[in-house]
Image (cartoon, rainbow, N blue to C red; front, side):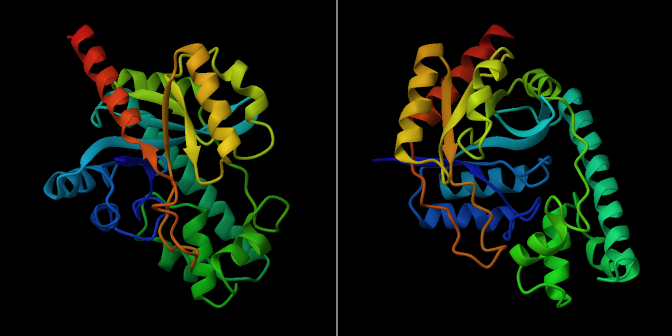
Length: 280
């Protein structure tokens, strides 16, 4: 049966591979369609789209936006957006500024506690845009300050660690509105990940989300069925994917472990087409 993966990351955010390499792996696995959904950036989408078309794969422009809801961070998947839409561009530029400020403060803390100097870390992070904690963790591992990327998070970067700095985030409503202003569809990402998001779904869907991510590498089969039922009862779209970041943490890549039915991709395409016709 044909399957898709609509949640994939490249090195344009915090993945290991170039966008074209993500597409090549998808093609090798026999995937029928994919979406590149890097964190808070669409920089890799044009290259991935071109590679997908060359390989004969279906493709959706995507993004995974970090946002705040009830003082908690949530992630929102946008699919099928116009990449040049002003509202989306402004939001992503704001998020890039937030990320750069956060990383600068993290680097200052690492310098203060004697882990690594500002100059050494800055030289390694300077070429990266947008920069994030993952890139700091990789730098710490490469400098021998951590045994692995995960160890760098556990020792320095996670909550309650000496270099932890909280995120500054736009509201979930701002993110949904920016995606809709770009003629895209907004989905709640991995609602089964963590302890609290499931309990807040009813409140979240008071906002005009278009659907949710039922399939995810962190979701059990029972969760998938529950999210499918939730969506059916409310007339929502479904999406899903492996959330693959390649082997950035030196772990086996997750691509191929989550096979989303091709019909989900078709329903999303149909909705985007209908919306485009309505909006002229």
